[in-house]
Image 1 (cartoon, one colour):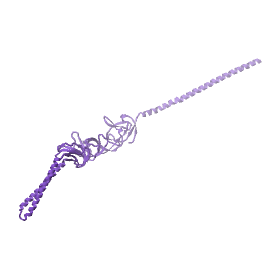
Image 2: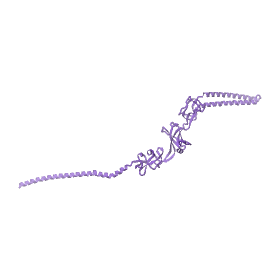
Image 3: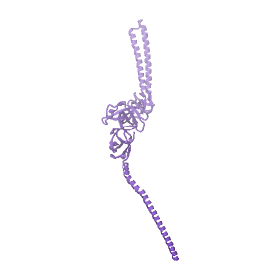
Image 4: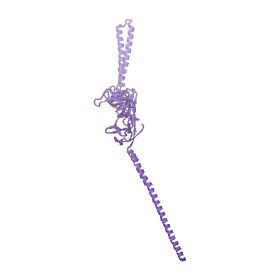
Amino acid sequence: MNFETAGWRRDSLEGGAVDDVLIAQRRRKRRAFIIGAVLVAAILLAAYFLFGRADGAEKAAAPAGATKGGAAAAPAVTVVVPGRQSVERAIAATGTLAARVDMPVGVAGEGGMVASVLVQPGQWVGAGQTLAVIERSVQSQQAQQLAAQIEVARADARLAQQELDRAQALVSRGFVSKADVERRIAARDAANARVRVAQASLGETRARIGRLSIRAPAAGLVLDRNVEPGQVVSSGSGALFRMARGGEMELLAQLSESDLAAVPVGSRAVVTPVGTTQSFTGTVWQISPIINEQSRQGVARVALSYDRALRPGGFASVNIVSGSQQAPVLPESAILSDDKGNYVFVVASNNKVDRRAVRTGAVTPRGIAVVEGLNGTERVVLRAGGFLNPGETVRPQRQKI
C-alpha cells in the first residue's frame, strides 16, 4: 500500500508537470495572438489615417481646386483709364528747305573777263563787299582821258571868265559894247557847262568801272558760286552768285487744303531735316494764297534762323502746332495696328475684351493722343494686346498713368 501511494504520488507529480508545460505554451500562444492582433489593428489604424483622410481631403479640396483652376484660366492684363488731357493740335507735313530771301547776284554792267573771285560758298559777307572783279584796263584809260578833258574845259572856263571881266571893265569907257559883254557872258557860261559835261562823263565812266566789281547787295551767306577767273561774263550771263540775306532760312511745307486753312500765320513749327535727329523751332510767316490745281496742296512758309544743318534744297519734316484740344493720351504700347488701321483693346464691365478702332493725333512726351474712338473713361489694355482676342475674358489690373 505504501508502494502504491508512492506510485500515485509520483504519477501525480509527473501529470502536474505536464499540465504546467501545456499551460505555459497556451499562454505564449495567446500572448503572441494578442500581440499580432494589436499589430494588425495598429497597421490598419495607421493606414486609415494615411490614406482615408488624404482621400477625404482630396475629395473636399476637389471643388475648390476646380474653382481655382477655372479662375486661373483667365489671363491677367494691365489696364489704364486715360481720361482727357489738353493736347496741342499738330499738323505733320514735309517740305523743302530754302533761303528765306534768295538773292541772285550777277553782272550789272557791260561785263568783261573775270580777273579774280574773292569768296567761296558758305562764306559770310557784308553789304557791299566785293565778290568778284572784272578786268578794267580799257575803262581806266577812258577815265583818265575824261579827267584830262575836264582840265581843258576848266581852262577854257577860266579864260572866258577873264575876258568877261576885262570887257566889263572897259564897257563904261565905251571901248566895248554891251553886245560884246553879253557874248563873253555866254562864252563863259558855255565853258562852265563844258566843264560840267566833262565831269558827268568822268562820273559815268567811274560808275561803269565800279560796276565791274561784283558786290554783295546785302549782308548774308554765299550759297552758290558760278564763276571762275578768266571767264568772260556779261549782263546776260545769269547769276554768278546766290546769297541768303542775313543767313535766314525757311521751310516750304506742303499742306492739304484743309490743313492749310487750319494753320494761322504765327503758328509755332518744329522742323527736322532728313539725316539728322536735331530739330529746329520756327514760325509760320506766310500762307500761300493759292492751291496747286494738280496736287491740291498749298505752301506754308516756316521762317528759321541759320544753322549749318539747314541746307537749302534739302528735305525736312515739320510739325505745325495749330491749337490745342482735349483728348485721351495713351502709351505707345496700348495702340496696335493692322491692315484695318489703328485700334486698342477695351475691357468691358463683364471683363470681356472688345476691339475699338481709333484715330491717333499728335505724339507728345506723355504718349500718343487719340482724337477719335475713345472718350477717356474706358479701361484700355496697356500691354500684351497682341495676344488677346475680341470677346476673351480677362482679369483686369488697373494701373495709373
